[in-house]
Image 1: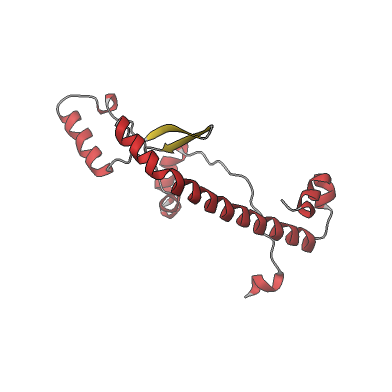
Image 2 (image 1 turned 90 degrees about the vertical axis):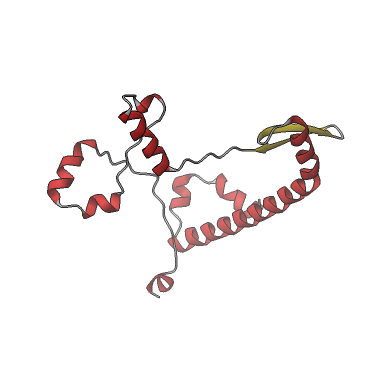
Length: 158
């Protein structure tokens, strides 16, 4: 990272917070631009690594009968680990039908399925008060980390 940006960490948070809003906005923009540049560079390097090893990895996966997960190979004393994560998705309508069939046959669907109930917040807030009250005991509101965006006041008005 550029030394100008690294110098930021030599300051305390309170010293940095004491700077004018325009300075904080400029620093934030510089860091975001540097982050975008680094992400782009990493994507480029990862593309080169994939280009270099993809044929060998496919061959290794085929030979080992391993469609996903991690495989390893060696190249001039460097261990190359290639991970192809498994991402499974389940058709919710079909699972619901299967759960109903299990229940109709006297079985317990929870022996086979993890059932999760969700309520879309947009729907919840649109409901009449009487319905919302019935759901309130089951609802917990948690907040995430605060996010701030600094921009020129003129940009915000457009």
